[in-house]
Length: 399
Ligand SMILES: [Zn+2]
Image (cartoon, rainbow, N blue to C red):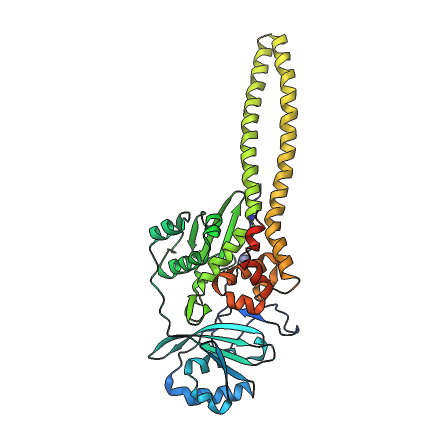
């Protein structure tokens, strides 16, 4: 069997510079539509003393586009003349995402403010260009549990590491955050495999990878998953989660949709092992027939030989069936009932992120990750898909 390697999530690009934006192959000619933007932005820390200057820059850059802030659930319009009443973190965030080509996006940014710390600011850019910003309290990440505790609490397979990588605090926080978001049922189905911290995938843009080898599976988390650690969060600004948790959730999404195919491979491997045993026994008998022949016991050799013809036919038939089973398993890994049901829920709409537009597998993995890490964001972009997940559509498809 050739190994099946799944596609996996590419890391958000992190351009340096304040408003540099790179997107590859995202069809800029298409009309703006709502999407979740997982692009990270490196930026110099803002300083409270720059507020007036920042407000003036935002005013000039946004050229009359509407700016609102969301506070305690209510949205309040902010006149350009009042921009200098906004916090520097919000002003900086508006500056970072104010480009016209991000219309429709939601960006969850971590904004460093000199001498204060880092603030989460979520900015929604409506397709018409209006911006709505929401500021959260200063970020303080929790200290993650140790490897043994994580395994015991969530029932994961072994936590492995390769090269210079190890399950350091950011990696454990990403894993813990992702596993905490899963339901008990999802955890039972998905997390028993080994989780591997490794330096780089191939290509290097990879943040994570779910690797299937027939019945076996492993989930890789690469250094790249942490590249935007300081510049991006996911979830609500009043309860921000590390963006790296999205990578783990995304790969778990692949584990979910490929599960029926993987289980079919497990059944295949079991029957394959049984066939190998049958073959070994058959070959042992062949030896015996030849031995009898050499000993001149022709009648006995013939009798045994005839009985073996039936075995040979059975082995050939089982072999043909197994080959069909393997093809079916491979097809199930590529598509399968979860992706079929997801496609129905998606109803022809584009993926929730630019990256997800690559394929239905990536679209599902991105939706699965957002459903767990930022359901509000998924609900804004694909409300029908959020409802489908909430109703357990992804689990019902496995039944
Ligand atoms: Zn993927």
